[in-house]
Image (cartoon, rainbow over all chains, first blue to last red; front, side, top):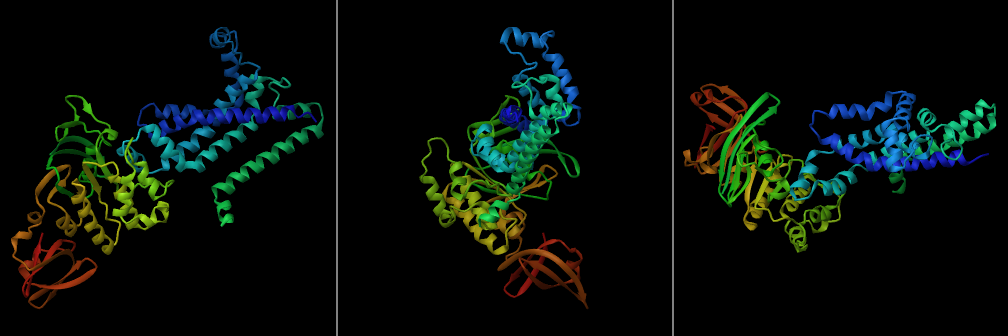
Amino acid sequence: MDWQPLVLTFKLAVVTTAILFVVSIPIANWLSSTKSKIRPVLETLVSMPLVLPPTVLGFYMLVAFSPENALGNWLNEYLGIKLIFSFGGLVVASVIYSLPFMVQPIQAGLSSLPSTLKEASYTMGKSKMTTLLKILLPNIKPSLLTGIVLSFAHTVGEFGVVLMIGGNMPGKTKVASIAIYDEVEALNYAAANSYSLILFSVTFVILLLVYLTNGGYFKRFAQ
Amino acid sequence: MIRLNLKKTLQSAGGKMVLDLQLNIKKGEFVTLFGESGAGKTSTLRMLSGLLRPDSGTIEVGEATWFSSQENIDLKPQQRKVGYVFQDYALFPNMNVRQNLEYALQKNQDSAKIEELLEFAELGELQQRKPETLSGGQKQRVALARALVQRPEILILDEPLSALDLKMRIKLQEYLLKVHKKYKLTTILVSHDIAEIVKLSDSVFELQNGSVIKKGAATDFFGLNRTSAKFRFSGEVLKIQREDVLYVISVLIGNDIIRVVSDPKEAELLEIGDRVFVASKAFNPIIQKI
């Protein structure tokens, strides 16, 4: 069996999740505390990947990043970045595609904290940054964990966006979900089954760990 | 001297309310804001501490201007020296008692303050405990000690004792008085409990629909000087019963229900739910609407 698609899948999921974690905290923090009028617009944009067919997202990214167009051309000319049919492009697409899975749990967690926690910290002379890092985030650990795991699992399961923007290039953009499709096309059911079983088991174990942790089963067991 | 001159349109449960009030509080005073829920007490405290921005007006503390809509001054809550004890205590759940206090330390501040406050608030044995394992009274003491770490000039107490039982309230009231004197604070309390107000505060401001409708020294405020009574309690009328030519009025004082005889003229002025004083001169009790 060729392990490369699986390695690529998990590499993509790790990189995407790490980027999403850093990007989503400020977005979620802003969304949970702002009274701005553009908030519903931004919330809608963040949530769009939940309902939009992945192929739509992939199609527009394909067009936007194409060297034929202004954005893609600019990226290529000035930064030397080629996002189409490359691992970098997959990461960008996955970050956008999995954004709601990270932002929404963190936003919900932050909104559920009483606002007096934040206010108490401010009256003690602490900055917004200190308050976020030392008070708010440590008190929404279950939400952070949920966000990390959901985005990781969602990226592992990605298919449409990857196919549109990454194509099917072994070692570069051929992730496990696409490899499965490939093997089935070639009537190679045994190989497809191996990939599928591994994805199935890994995602099952990850999700199970989250539910056990957030449900406090480990703590009860430790006592 | 703290001078507040505030205007703010608030969205309350009963619709729009315009808060428009002037308050002068002397340095070192223990002041109570009294009034119905939604009268604007908490909003006033939040504006003083910088958590809510007034629409217009000024906030002056001593020589400093904390807020002025005309001069475009608005100090952040971080820059105002205010210790705030929230109604829900707002203890940080991820930190134990000691860490809650330590978090409030200012840059380069000596941590000896922590030891002093832990001892003063009798929290020494609880210092490694997380807030969720503490009783209401203990949480209250932590919140108060934490608000004092940064040596505030002004201490704000938003209904700090309302969630506690009577015994704990009385104990913590004495504790609040001790804190106020020891640290030479200007203390602003929100309370509904008349006994508590009389016991703790120098002066009282009554708020209604966003304005000060009455102010005065605590003892004068509730008409305590109108009778030369020997002892006096405040309570709530529970029942008014007619018995022949007299009325028997049941009054809830603390956790006790007492029955007081009243003549029909006085009883007619009373309704169930009224706040009253029950006072006695030597032998004949007096009941009087407040």
